Length: 260
Image (cartoon, rainbow, N blue to C red; front, side, top):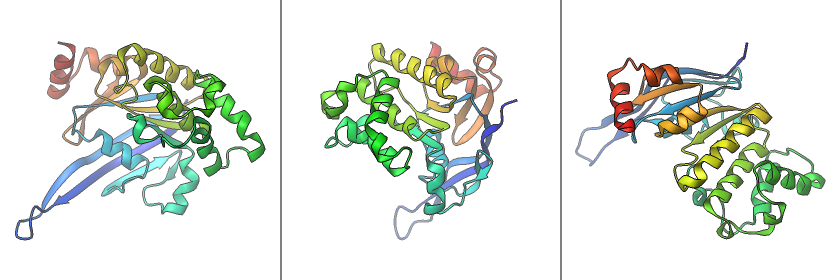
């Protein structure tokens, strides 16, 4: 049996909003007491409308944002309250593929420098091996090694997304969060990137948490699905079962609206 890669229990994130000095404080529950497990080597899809709390979950899992309550266990280690230095050693195990490449890739850095950066930060290989490792990663994501001296502006959107993926796997990450990984790409390119992610999952033994609003992406990539509504998980189960026989009224409405 597969071990648990990620265990989330009663995770919450509350924001306190105050419009003016004289107004009362208002608590917004962006995420409220969600719980789920992700087994090693599986793919869990988290789906919901914009504002349902999906990206907030991603930020908490990566410890880019502190949770208000609850716990996060990564490969058996509680990382919920770890400080910056203590968390550093765990960051190589959990990486993210972002939606917008322009927000991640420094336009002043070459492709070679962008891929080399996580190798240097996490000391994945020795300095003498950087060049060979950059070539290996480029090849793994389906790019020519001749692209290494180019800048992001010289590549297409699909090629830049492959660079984002190369950076994520460069650390030898075991769990990767895919935050709308293809929504910003042309339809003709989306399938290629999804196939690449599927192949890398098999080849490297990866575990995915895939955040999306696209049911076709979930059906292609995920073994299980969690449906978010107003900061809560309202339904979770095997993808095929949830999509074919949803039990929650919101899930039924969401699937009907997307499939119509």
